[in-house]
Length: 341
Image: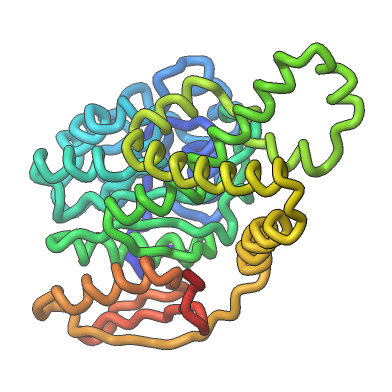
């Protein structure tokens, strides 16, 4: 069965909005035994209509499961995680899908769950929210951050294998602080900029004329502004210090662009725009090299943990994780050339 490489054949998803619902539907379609639960009775009814097993309580949903995906609004994750942990045995792997990792990772450690909780963040989404926007294909091939800890490598291996097998995920191993730093620029600041652009248009006396002319540049640049404002606010507040730091950098770059434009300096203006174009080109066409690494499964994990975190911080990802005959083997992909900077 798909997912048995990680030994995680029975799953549960707690919180079935856009991401949680998509995870649940994909697990079901892959043939895993999966149950779902959502705090909204109407959503639970929608799940039943889609042929998904739905429990009446969180505890019923997670009992006897091999892995539980904890989803829902960021502020609720530590409390929900504690509730799920109390209703599962010590071999059950726990993960979440929150867009900020440091707070929930700290909470899990404080709860004594570091050996079986693996903070996670699938890098995918949509401009709509809720189960109605969920689909089993949403996360196919997505970059999926996992944050292995010093006592949780066994859980990390099992979860990574499941994500690769079921979602064809590109597993990006990072520490929680590194994730939050990278996600600030990759995801959180773009939400601020999209909201700022769309909000400025909303306030403009020429709003309808602007929207009539809007094409791909406006649509692409404001796509994430279509998400629920409360969800975006939770994300930004959860990573406030990093977002503010990166917004300062964006402000500096905007100042350079503004100065070149005000001065009529075409060369300086084109130079700054060329920097942006280079990043965009790298996004679409990074050259990746493939390598394989193996570590003893039961020995000191410090070297394995360091390798995984360095891989993710360098822009790499995993597409394979297998434990056989006392060893763990990884198939990894790393940018062939170091990033500019």
